[in-house]
Amino acid sequence: MRLSQFHLRTEKETPADAEVISHKLMLKAGMIRKLAAGLYTWSPLGLRVMRKVEAVVREEMNRAGAIEMAMPSIQPKELWEETGRWAKFGPQLLKIRDRKEQDFCFTPTAEEAVTDFARNELASYKQLPVNFYQVTTKFRDEIRPRFGVMRAREFVMKDAYSFHIDDDSLAAEYRNMYDTYSRIFTRLGLKFRAVFADTGAIGGSASHEFHVLADSGEDALAFSETSDYAANVELAEAVSPGGRVAASESLRDIDTPTQKTCEDVAALMGIPLQRTAKSVAIIGSDADGKEQFVLALVRGDHMVNEIKLAKLPGMADYRLATEAEIADYLGSEPGFLGPLDAKKPIRVIADRSVAALADFVVGANKPGFHIAGVNWGRDLPEPETADIRNVVAGDASPDGKGVLGLARGIEVGHVFALGRKYSEAMKCTVLDANGKAVNPAMGCYGIGVSRIVAAAIEQNHDANGIRWPAAMAPWNVAVCVINPKNDSAVSDAAEALYAELKAAGFDAVLDDRGLRPGSMFADIELIGIPHRVVVSGRGLEAGTFEYRARDATESENLDHETLLGKLR
Ligand code: ATP
Ligand code: MG
Ligand code: MG
Ligand code: MG
Image (cartoon, helix red, strand yellow):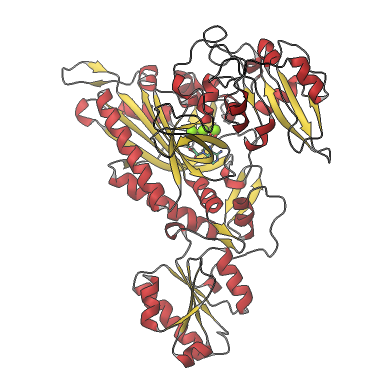
């Protein structure tokens, strides 16, 4: 590729309105442009990077024996009603009506569609196991699209679905996909961790998430360096009120039976927090009067009385949120605010940062139980996943082999053992070896292809811009030509090197735009090309090329042979 014939449009200023570094740099490098909330156009540069991610994902999925296919983006309501998810998926499901007044949704995931395909295509155990995958656009009407393509409404997901005659076969494929995901994220050059996870709206019996570790991550993870234990703290939230808050490091200090009351909290925060059986939420405002949700307790009653809080750093004032604000924040349909089931009697959510919650002290009524005011067995049934209800930094890991630490992560992949939830609901059967019709066991496996692009930047950047891992770089080598229009010897030499590199299999780009060196180098660094080679008149005279790796601070003058050695 010659940059003079490409569309590269970088910005000098760092966009101020973007919150996280990846969003800022993707805009600054001109990789994405916003069309509407949560909807982004991928520029030619951005798309090159996304295609690199897709290529690795496809290669490894194919190597693992999965088979690529494609399902429609628009899917009929009737299909989603068979599993009950037309209603259950909630407002994230974008619903569409056609000219015949028939209802459809834009696919947020494709269990229904693939199970429909399977029930028509699969007849015998001899066709199993099989794993179908696609790399397609998904839509989720996220309540708070943010951080650019990290939490978009329209995004690219690789989703795979496997079908099995028995649980052993499913377990083997789950392991195969787990290993495949590990290979994918390793090849992409990302620091990641696989953690136990909640099965959420997808359902099923076992699940692991893969997280790229980054401070800006929306998820809190608990893990131990010396044991295999690792869990998404959200999982604890699913079985325990205040699980997310329970991840706060300060909770270590409050293993005492002392409790503050709701009135104490109200006094402390200077707001009229009432004893109430209704949902309660607190909105904080900073010194500039900017408001943000700091805590929501949904259907709190007796729980509310037992929560004690302190002022959040950075918050100057607090007020109670209205029911409508809470519903809006949670993205709930009104019904959600009704009585919750026994497993989720209360939901504590807090904006973004667990670190910011360090001063939000939540009481514990029994040493070792870091959950707000819960007396397990009395207030709540014992959670099934007792081993993960206390995720607190510094505690022993549940397997006793290490000490728990906390980190933040960006969820980039998720594997689920679904069991027969979908095959039963949708009457998908195959004949087993005895000629009996049975529901196949299923697994499903997602990767956030477009999110990975942003997540990689969160982990790989410096003051000058992006530092792509080799596998994701839009090009691997940039050949920068100094003064190409006025110096034909230089441009000939650059063309020759560029042709040679391409012939040798390097993904090279020729920067023949004729920019001043400073602007040209700034662009090449901003867009994160791992290797830069400068061809100049001075270098030609000395018989050298000026080489600099993206992560180096100094350039080196290298002869042709040494240069090629460096690039390999
Ligand atoms: P999250 O917890 O971030 O909302 P999820 O658990 O809802 O994600 P899954 O249903 O597990 O997502 O979907 C598989 C993958 O799709 C996720 O691991 C993530 O990488 C990606 N993904 C999900 N939602 C989005 C989104 N709004 N924007 C970009 N990628 C997304
Ligand atoms: Mg989600
Ligand atoms: Mg998730
Ligand atoms: Mg998930």
